[in-house]
Image (cartoon, rainbow, N blue to C red; front, side):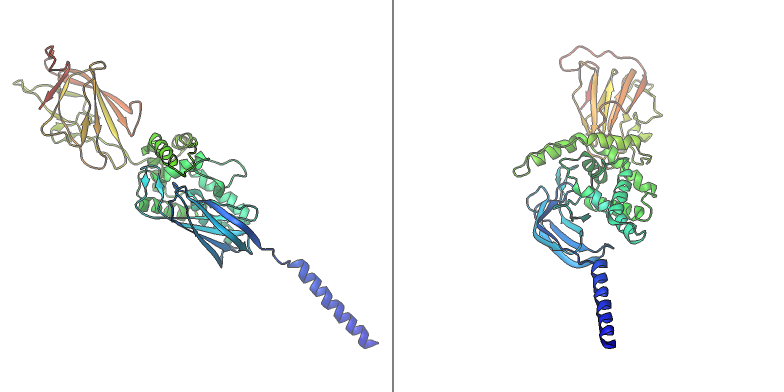
Amino acid sequence: MKTKILSSLALGLFLGFVSCNITDNPVEQPVTKETFSGYVQKGPFISGSSVAISELDESLNQTGRSYFTTVTGNSGSFEQKQVELISNYVQLKADGYYFNEVSGQSSPGQLTLYALADISQVNSANVNVLTHLERSRVEYLVQQQELSFNAAKTQAQQEVLALFDLELPQQATSESLNLTNNGILLAVSCILQGHLSTGDMSELMANIISDIRPDGTLDNPSLGSQLIDNARLVSTAAIRQNLEKKYAEPGMGNVSIPDFETYVKQFMDETAYEPKTFITYPETGKYGLNILAEEVTSVKANDSIGHHVFYSMKAELPEGTSLKIMLKGGMWAYVGLPVPENWTVSEYDQTTLSQVFTVTQSGIPNDLKINIEAGETTIEYYENGATVPSRVKQLVSEGVIVTPPDSTNLKSQFFYFP
């Protein structure tokens, strides 16, 4: 009898142990996707770009289970059949060339973008600049501060968007966004790209990622300055035109480009970052005083013996900037030989008594030899694609006011020295 009692007790303890073990540590059900898909976009990555889908554990470490696919077509879409994972979490890594929405051309260099996603309830996830910027911060919050994946993802997404003074609606996730239906994503993409090369943009993103990883804020002011300079110098009208042309190509879906201009402007209006890239106007050029220099407000039309006095029209444009100068109301003459250096000159407009001088290419020197006849000339500066003058100056020229003869070969109030 004693032996039977002990045997029964041992069996009961064993069954109790097994029962507790099953209750406390349930076997995880695999996550299966008949088809898993998404888009890789900076602009859209081109066909043949590689996409790796790697399983992550709850600490966001790779488990070793991965799937590999490629982008098909030039809209950035990818697809992977028969995905089966133990964990809910994946890392997506994309490598390839992309359509640069600022330049309107494919990138000359390859770009790598990442995304983290919980795919337990979804069959798709996109890879874009927002998912890329937030990834390292999510890892820090999960691994160092022990936040849940969803909490870390929500916090990191809000912190990244705050860098651009933007925010998404509640429940929206960065990996669900598409350039063709979300203006915020497109605005951030444009701001990061600016007129930078692929390598320089990649470096900018890497530096931002490193900076925000421990605290979610951008502490290096030079990085913020680069962002606001990029936003100031891009042409949103040209970007829209480039994207509309791209998505009108066969197989691209002919979609409507969302309003992103509002968000670029919002960033420029609200950011505390200080711009550093400015067009400057040196006091002198090759031909003397520079009529565009702020301190030059008066000149002489002639010297003491009646000869024309010539001046320079010169600006220093960092790469990516643009400048248009309009002279109005007075009389002037630019010299054709030597040919104006890096300036394009319009025909004189008899109706508005004006002429437009445009710097042909930024990042290289420019200069132009010009004489200002006696009287007052208005100079309007249109910097970086501005449609209204960035500044206006009155330039007074001392000397004898000359009234040009009425001739079909000599335009009123405009002389040209060949």
